[in-house]
Length: 181
Image (cartoon, rainbow, N blue to C red):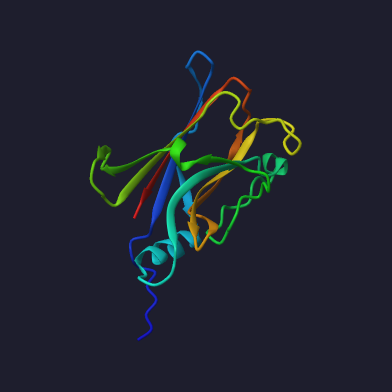
């Protein structure tokens, strides 16, 4: 039997960014926006469920990148496609999983037991990423994606292209990502 169902409740995600100055005051806030669940997220989930030799690791980090400066001009950034397998920035910065706060959610409350929702909070403090560097002329961010591991390869779980966030070296970006399964 071959059945392909697209009418199932889709995996979905959203995120919210807050930029803070050195005194902890909000200088910019994105509002809640949708993110794109990557095709590799479904492969990763399948790898978890398979009882064979597949090695699947959940969230191993959050990658952030500069994207393309051309996205700031008309006609703007391209859509974030589920088929994307990596960030556009080949020298992205990775926030390791142990630096992320990852919780189950029941509605908006943190749950001690598994639910169908995850919340991931990343705090990129002053100097993180440590740009400018040889590949980045400033600290502007335009893309991100949660990553996992499937058979030893890094895979995207979600992918977002967002308006440019010009960061100075002393600012803090607090990024909250929610995934619903």
